Length: 300
Image 1 (tube, helix red, strand yellow):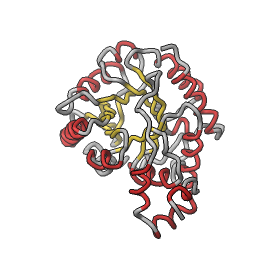
Image 2 (cartoon, rainbow, N blue to C red):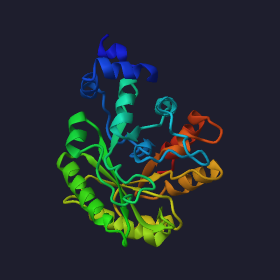
Image 3 (cartoon, one colour):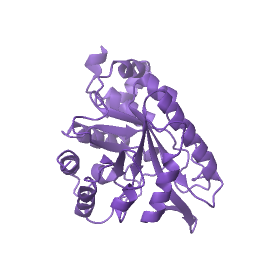
């Protein structure tokens, strides 16, 4: 079976390919059709699927919602097939699966780099780089690397994360590849890590993230939608994608918040995972179409 004949295979056949022809992954990355990072409108909608590698499987009240890989891949394939979806953010295991399924041609592909800060662990804020490296991102022809950068002033693990993120920004810039930095001011409360989502905390995190690395030429930010976002976004000139966050309440509230935010000058789109992949009504295509309309049908 040729590489082209394998395109479109479903999840049930992926294990056989991994057993019989592991080199196919490298060959398909080398042959993947690529596209510009952004289209003519300068905007981007990316579906995120890197939560499972950090042990974060819950969506709303279901703690194991993302536990099924076959179900996740089906949802991702549906999302990536919809017009207006520019690409996907994921860890090597998920992206290699999607590659073998033939779902990544003509898509932006962002590799998730640090997943060592496992959800609920005592070392959660020492977020080691356990996924993609900058060299591997460049070698495979990915379009960028993303790093979660939580800043907890009372946790010594923060400095290691900052140092590693700075190194990744520098190395990605050397390869002329996007570095997507996702910063939060964070703290522990009752033994759990929580991100501070007030405007001033977000502004502080932006300034720390913007200064990481030896060059900012390829740096993008991934930021939450918070109150007073116009003042928050005045803290940076970096192109920014807004994240969907942990879905709660009525999805329409999220759509309304995204729509209000996408007109800000430095906001160039969305990176959304669970809110689109696991909508309350189960209709992934409809949820994705709404987000795509907001991103690409905006007023810019």
